[in-house]
Amino acid sequence: KISCSELAKIKADVWLMSPPCQPYTRRNTSSKRDLSDPRTAALINLINILKELDPLPRTVLLENVVGFEESQSYKLWTDALISRGYTVESIVLSPTAFGTPQERPRFFSLATLKGHSVCSIENGVKKAKASSKLLEKLDVAPGKQIRKLSEFLLADWPSGRENERDENASLMKKLLKPSSFCMDIVT
Image (cartoon, rainbow, N blue to C red; front, top):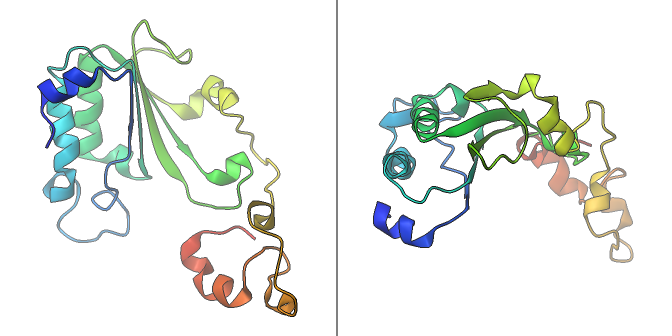
């Protein structure tokens, strides 16, 4: 557990965060969700540190599963950021929006300390559906051409094993077919 004084000594300009997603995932149907899950302790510690930290990071990027934005943890997080003078923008993106063959939407929250703007946005929390400026900077386009998975993998196959290769990707069929439901691969 890091302390406020330890974090202050680092004087980081940027925080990149990805708290454990299990407390927020839609697949978690247990009673240990959100703040009742002990895996949220590190995020809660950072929220408490943020209330007192000096100097503050200029930018904080948080990534998590879709559903995090509806959690009590996210409300505490954004409340702490806004109270310290940050502007917060949130967005849900999928790698397919960047031409990557994986359909796995992720939630991103970008907090920028006022006076140190990364992109032009309004004060407070703003849903990214209305923010085309952030999307333009990220080169996200609806209907963007999705590249074949083979473009990301080695194309060389051992001689005599070509029949094991999937026609659209450089993966062995025996690996791709049984696992594709959990790998979120777009083929």
